[in-house]
Image (cartoon, rainbow, N blue to C red; front, side):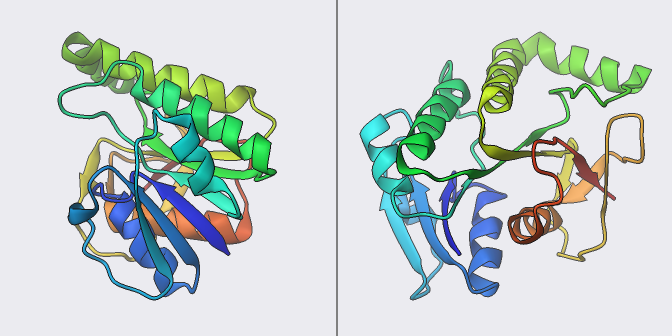
Length: 210
């Protein structure tokens, strides 16, 4: 499979690239700064670009079988980054006939199947105080994904993302139903690779956790 990964140099993105290569996929890593991605493989192509430039996004998606967005908020914060990135990605996918999209995110963006507990609501409230723009951007981007006719999956990871090992042992659920507050980035990447292969959560937004 040919996969383009946006946000490929981030904490989870680099692990998605690494595991996709190990699984035998051809990967195009779309990054702002190529120096941050030190992986080497004959199946890896690194492209420097900006997700806010539609022509660069279109060129990266051309000829791919699937798109993975591991984008997150920038520091300093770029208003509307995730929302506009999704607009550009979805438009390019439609133009080039690419249907499969997996986007990673957090549990502060809720799903209709969630049954958030008081703790979940409190965490979102606390996070919204200093970072309401970040949460709003993430919510807008998720809403946009849901309105497309793409074969999308939104993989939501809990707050406590660790640098622990890839175990392959995790569960999927929704807030208030069969989830915990912890996951390793490596297992988050594993879920993305498994979902690319098996497509068990198309048009769904599960929480992946231990």
